Amino acid sequence: MMATHDRHDTFDPISLEIYWSRLISIADEAATGLLRTAFSTIVRESNDFATVLMDRNGDSISENTGGIASFSCILPKTTKTFLERFPAETWQPGDCVITNDPWLATGHLPDFTAVSPIFHKGKLVGFAGSISHSPDVGGALWSADCRELFEEGIRIPPSRLFRAGKRNKDLVEVLLANVRLPRQVMGDLEAQVIANEVCARGVDEFLGDTGLPDLQGLGAALHQRADAAMRRAIAALPDGTWHSTLEADGFDEAITRIACAVTIKGETMHIDFAGSSKQVDRGINCVMNYTHAYSVYPVKCALDPFTPRNEGSYGAITVSAPEGSILNPRFPAACSARQLTGHLLAGAIYKALAPIMPDKIIAECGGAPTMRALFSGLDGAGDRFSQVLFASGGMGASPHRDGLPTTAFPTNVGAGSIEAYESVAPLVVWKKRLRADSGGAGRFRGGLGQEVEIEVRAPDEVRLSLLSDRRDHPAQGVLGGGAGGAAVIAFDDGTRPHPKSRTTVSPGTRVTLLYPGGGGYGDPATRDPEALAADIRDGYVSAAGATRDYGAKP
Image (spheres, rainbow, N blue to C red):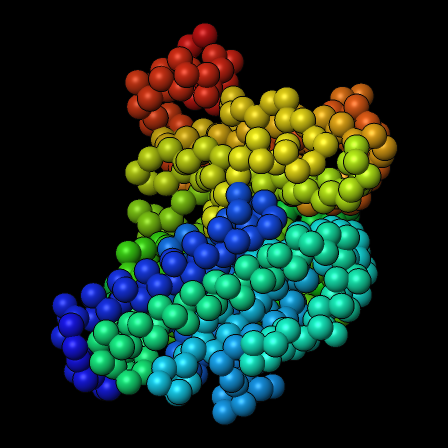
């Protein structure tokens, strides 16, 4: 297939669809390269990464199918920052620029962004980018209880990891001297470089096959298509402003309050978080990049779920939050556990929009925010380990079906293999099972959370860092639906550690984590009796729970 298009209005619909699908496949190939070469289970097993193809302006054109949506939304912003620091004409083949600065990238230090240039016939035509969650960045592990950013780990400003194919040895030496797992950290970074190279080769081949001189005209056409789809969806809603508030556990006495106002005017939407909690001196602050990403992505899921995402998907949506608030903190606020706040935004936005689009939203999710447990110490051979348990609570129920059990949303990280988890750390998982009665009651039931029991088998004490919420504020139902089950974390002696702090765990100790369930949708009295009977038969709802929550006869 040959073409000579250089204007975005000259592509016929069939060619445009074919080109778009191929560009998505290039991003998917890059993701495969990252998965197959990464060292840590965070990438290989838990899917905490994304790959994005961008034009030479840094605007995203395509992203890998299964990547973290917030990463894909943020990566173009970071690339534009790189271009301010390193102008386009200074990039060379074999370059790779990285950063983990929370305010420039994804909102906390554990995520590294890596961007490489793409050349075709000697001309810069675009950029390949990847983000992955590093197994370690030094500092206080992945924690929520630090009081400022400098405690949370090493911060790398925009820097060249590779220049014309030559590694920046000084940068690597500084980075690896500050982390506990240098082999895994460097292995994952090099995997990101490889992913970018796979993407660049794919684009060079694509341009050669199609005869296109670069990606600009095609990118503009794809952006226009995505933008038009979103604007049509917004325009179908009534004009006006809708409000909601949502509360979460926050940190100790400082409860997190999210105030949300969604204003629709014609084909545009503005989401304003004025009135939300002020920033706090703990690591649950959510920088604006992350706030924006987890505001626009839930809207995309609800209003335009089928058009592939790119830069144009979010042009009709603007987001604001007061500077100094928990959703737009001032540097150097602690933000390592920013997901404990950012993941709440989907629920607040859907709650605001429920009156005007009840058929397109879901109830609050038990897995929003995610619950994480990070174990760190020395194994029997004296080698350092640092391992995160990736598991999820239940999704909120929808207008059409029960919520999915143990499924993350709005993030889409995976759980990974327990066998792989146990193989790299002195930990034994004794239980990992669905949690009965944890799904909120409703016409459609919330998704079930899960029960996980882990025993520490290290020869000495290990550090446990917990990042959790929903203990005192479980996921709420919508339109009459009930709340999901609350989070519980306990040791086998009955004591309960602080849900957002670090603690020391002795060998032989077992830790039980009860992951929250999702909220229900609609009045529980309207649930199909056959569906309730099936829930009881399958053990998802106990007989006592059916009587308590649904009014079923004992």
